[in-house]
Image 1 (cartoon, rainbow, N blue to C red):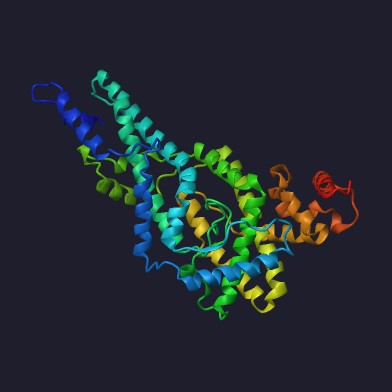
Image 2 (cartoon, rainbow, N blue to C red; image 1 turned 120 degrees about the horizontal axis):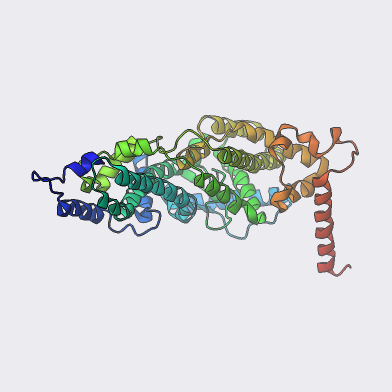
Length: 438
């Protein structure tokens, strides 16, 4: 910062304030149009994500035939799932989307997830430069007032750099996911079965299973997940709340950012230059150090995401085994391999907040839901989702039998059992009241 100030000193020892203001004005002109408080130009971010999609291969709009195939798969999926879940059918019709359409349809949800994080990054950069203004060696004390003037521009710069990384991640995810909410977040505007035919074909390559069976299996997974989101109204917002809490504790690697922003002329911070800086900062925005609060939030987030996907695994496994026993095991194994190797969920969380979500916990969660299915039935298992306070914990994932007592014997019911019994009793009473049985 002192070096930057020095360029405005004239040979006579005077500070050229007009030259400094001219640079700032040019820089702020380059940032014009970014009125979002987070510093993100969302129209540009969405366009950039679509550009990434286009660069990764053809993205044709689904044909009428593909739309009919998805509708037929959803019709069968609905009939099959009715026997294996306690949640109501979806009301919106199924759809086949292109990758670009998925990007457009999920933009609003990405804003909800990303803006708190972008704001945190922008605040860290602006505060860091403000401190440099105040403490720069050889700088005139009155120049400290310029820190407030620079803050909007720096926030826009930080938001722009983060948005470019986010756009690249969204575009890449759109080119990989097979269904609307495969990454575990409810990003769709409303609960709905959505498949991406272009990506579905890639998923089925080399499996030796008919394309129709692959489509049906993935439809069952997506409909199960969407029924869960629709029934457990608290779930989607709760995941986003945990992400926001984690973001508030994020430690930004300001040293990496300020090093990348080492420019002689601050008006050089054009969108093109910010794109180059974003590439330099790929994977370097977040400090690897986590606060104790982040560690605790990460544990809760991992557990909740594992419970969602583990439930989907359990429900899908039971459903498909009953109707497509020849394909159930190999398709389940394909999903597990995808989760462990080419995992779009992991890529999303890594880019978004620097998180490393462990897929092994999904298998633990699937085992837990399987035990609850055997001991409590479908209704008792799914009643757990009625309130966040009833959800199993990380300790329950480690030892699922603790939820049902020792080996399922008639041990004294624990707190969760009593709460579930009360919920089921209330539900049955409400049903009787609605039917006039008293």
